[in-house]
Image 1: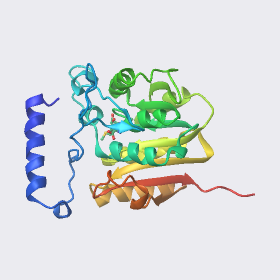
Image 2: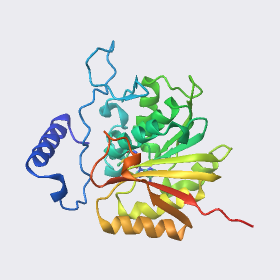
Image 3: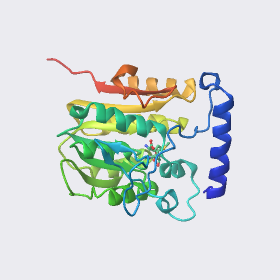
Image 4: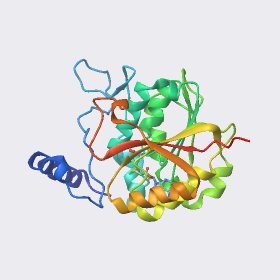
Length: 272
Ligand SMILES: C[S@@+](CC[C@H](N)C(=O)[O-])C[C@H]1O[C@@H](n2cnc3c(N)ncnc32)[C@H](O)[C@@H]1O
């Protein structure tokens, strides 16, 4: 796990690179690029202060946990370590939901590979009942975030977090069995396509989820290599999914980023 000092150095390098290089000149990268919306005060203060830059959904601040608390000690797997960071896709998807609350209000929603689960917190704040999932070793992050936002399991309305439970795309059979009914109306995925070998497993998990007939998967995705994107789209087609890119004007105007888009993924309805 990187130390706070290492994180500061990496963040400083990224900031300098962004200042000296226009974003469109970035080369495709294989590593995960750092966040672009880092300026928010996500730590819950003893008493909220006027003038602080809080991240809000419907004018209510959202708090995130301190990343150092989120992981089990000695956690070395980089795939799991990514869960305790907040990625831009999550911010963009949360703000997209805020702009289109009817997508989730009154709906049953599940998030895959949630990490700090910002889109789930936004959906619950907008009136959805939400199941948050991640790999078992990474699920702590979501528990902490649910706690500090008072969106406890079976907690306050208008929406609430119904459960926080492991769903590992690589060993999904038992985890899928533990998902209760009814089927989900919306599946949220934010920045879960970045490691090649995981992509077919993720898409297979999407295909095996209990999804309502008109259900939709919203995937906030950052392109890091065309090769991985091709694997994603081929896997989706193999599983019989259709997909369309949500137009940029439909996103929240203050929360967009080059290379990040939201895909609407759905099943072709069979007409008899
Ligand atoms: C880049 S992070 C994105 C986290 C969060 N969705 C966000 O946008 O901030 C990728 C997420 O995928 C999860 N993940 C990795 N491997 C997984 C697996 N086999 N099953 C389920 N989730 C997994 C990680 O734990 C992590 O939360």
